[in-house]
Length: 188
Image (cartoon, rainbow, N blue to C red; front, side):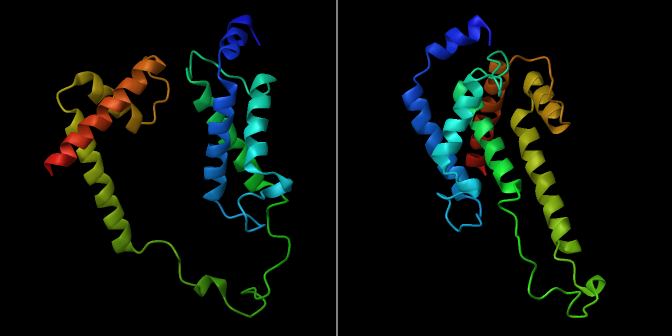
């Protein structure tokens, strides 16, 4: 870890960050189903507090590098590390079902090709597509007339991650779009 980042990390209020990160890890874990049935008892015997501490330790230890030029806020970086650690726990062998289902369709002699598709029907797909285009239309209406916002929105829609705008400006543009959407929705 270089001296510049080390100096930035010295100025962080670690007590406040740690408490906020534990709260965030608890929130994330609480939104998922765990084999234990309890979001305080995660896979591999971990708790949300352990996940928060591990995220901090991995960042300070250099295993999860923080680049302040890309992500200015250390807390947001730590949240992404928590997301990753929780995702790894969900995918771990410890969390996956260990016993086969008692009633398997194949054991029952059911032709699994005749089981109805649980996905959306054609009508539901059309409704979802209409909703998507309606929402997209609202976004485009919100930025209409502002060339910078229009270009930024189109880049986001196209999935262009690397656009020639620094991170602070990206956040400013996102907030500006949100404000315009709120104003637009007030009028509806």
